[in-house]
Length: 589
Image (tube, rainbow, N blue to C red; front, side, top):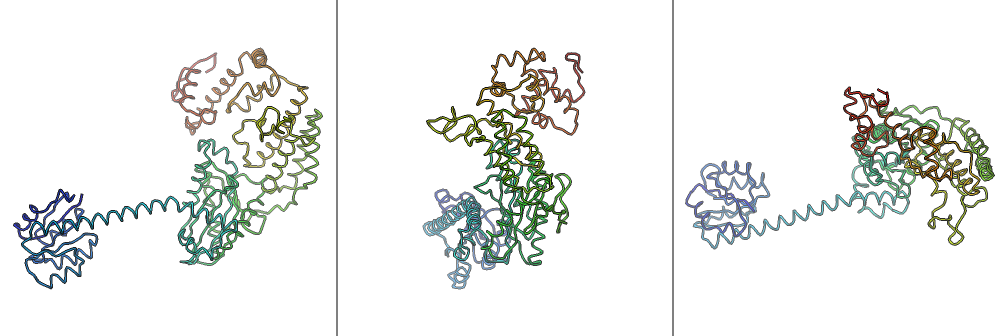
């Protein structure tokens, strides 16, 4: 519905227009009236007016002056000029002001409705164009980030030629225009699995989108930063930084990138608990050099010393030094170049010696000397850590090599045997190795947040190799029921399945449960529940912890389920317990 303003100092004319106009049929809802120009302007300020019908001869502000004000302040309002004088000057003013038409008094029904019909057609056309523009804008807003991601990714892969794609660059806001320096950042997500499971419901895409938003929002004034996931590696985010050069040159821009990363990395840890390491490449005014910048950024991130990663760190191009940041919660370092930590220059790990150690580990595992296999592994890890420097990239490579070699066993075949019909491990789907199938259900299996986790994953690989060797020859292994209790004590916050132990020790479910109850007086599930509840009591004494956080720490996915379990065990809810209610169960307060 459209709104009309009738501006005339004569009441009879206004009444005639109201009576003669086919308002409802033309879709015109509200008709406002004013007797002079000032009153008309006041109505324009208060209401949305689509069409103004203006008498040219009025006391005070006449129609000519009103048209000039209308054109200046309300250019979207259509106008129709009405006058009792067949005067060329009025006609000329109407033409200057781009009035839709010019009507002479007395106004007749046919002439009035013909003008109104054309006015509505023009308003309909404007509305359709505006809606199409909004629709195109929405579509562009949805598709533009993906287009920008594809363009930058193509540059990094050296398949995009900026000089031949000027229009595409203009569309994504890159190239041309104001002078900028472009550089790439490689962001390694060290504990992606933990964060993805704990904060993002296992949705990697959702996590990547959240990180991309923070990458954008942390950019300081004078810089734009666009982040996206590397499709070939979900543990890496790439950021393209564009720095204006209006304040300083390349050195100043590099300082801004460092200061930006000093803000970004602690922010990711504070918001999501995400630990990250970053490398950044050199800046250049040419987008054609973006691939070089990315390759140096990736190499810089790979040179970071895993043995010193205890919080967010970053590294720049051309060196092995690190720029350490304070842990989240302590605030970022002040802007400016940070003093590089004393670079620990260690020789690259001896690949041949490590390969030989892996072969000895696999051989010991296959021969049943499992303790020896672990000792060889521990000695090899100690030798790798002895120089005090182990590059993140080398650590990742060595871990992948260990998991691959120990997954094949000493003879080069997948541990656990294979199905001759398909070449896959017996009982497994084609293409899935026994190594993969036997790995524990660890939602953080791919994380590498620090040296301790790297070493633990190395030793886990050795233990899995030994476990497969025991299964292959069916000789079993030394076993005591306390092994199961020790595992529960360490992993009570995870899902404990009895099948984990029956498969590991080749014992029946009934026998294991009976043995455990004979030794400890309770079943495996009851023991796990008891341990969780005792831990819950301790954690509830920590005032800074929310009940939701305690629930998560104890492995409950649902806070309500945790509260119900706590009430069933202690007779009061967690909130009541925290508020001072105490109960006696089995003589314990």
